[in-house]
Image (cartoon, rainbow, N blue to C red; front, side, top):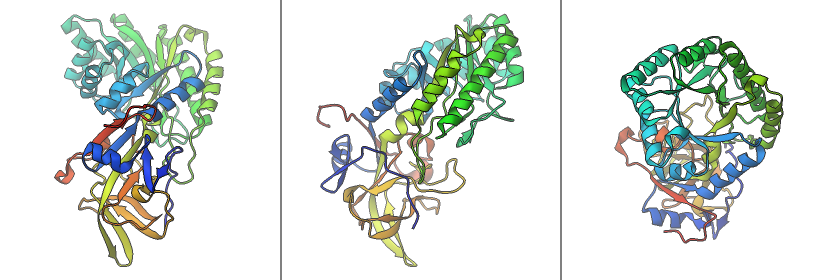
Length: 417
């Protein structure tokens, strides 16, 4: 038997069925029409935004990295709650604008922007976070061709990383951003070319649960921003300090204490270099805002025993939840929080593996976990499913249908549809 991650606080059951936003899982499935189904509770997202606002120093902006979950109904709600949207492709840019984002609140990062993507951002009036000197030259040439002043920021590849992060974005050779020792020269170049200089983007890593590590990275980012400012002679209107806030997917992990991060950042901002006195600051978050708000529901279609091991075969799988299968950014496979949603709260009586419907041994949603007895027709709930789910998974693999998605609001008194 192997342990699972801890189900996020606040998820409860009634009459043996998991409740999401006050309604049981079968009701959500009936309303959506089928499984597999992602259900997102907007109340949980709203609570995370409120936690951020309460913990961070006044004036620090909150940006949503929409790569975490770009589903339009959710994104539309997010646009009304945050101060900016960070996109990573022209496709995301188009979706953000269609969902109501103002272009002057959109920034576009990514190491492989094609000319047509640069053109789309410049025409829309979004900020381009430049990843290289070559990208800067192309953006300036395109802006001259269309007769517009481009909004340009410089993404800096920092000379430090975020300790304990699940994915390091700095601290060595990286495809992201301009190396720290070349950033000032690039800033001087784009200012001299007449661009609208929008500031710096410094992203050191992601998925960290140690608040002191995040605080150290933010302090280092402030120091780096001050250095680039001194060397370039150009004050950045905005410094995006990146994100890095993690959520506890796995056994033994605990939620990030954002108050520690906020207190440390308040001190660092109070002591910042005079050159950054008029600079605004932002933190860019994705999974921390939406991850715990999502639950993936998939129905058991077969129960089988092979060489003494029990397998619960579901109608979902890694084509919707690649990360939970252990095939997206993890070295050692560990189990996400999981439950039999139609036997919620029942005692565990057996060890079973939950597998998907794909013809690959990689399609395993839970590996030898303790569960109540579950049979064909029961529903499995996979938690922490609000980020990097559907669009971060190979949905076209083997031709299975896309999952259904449903946005609900646990704070609303309105009945579910």
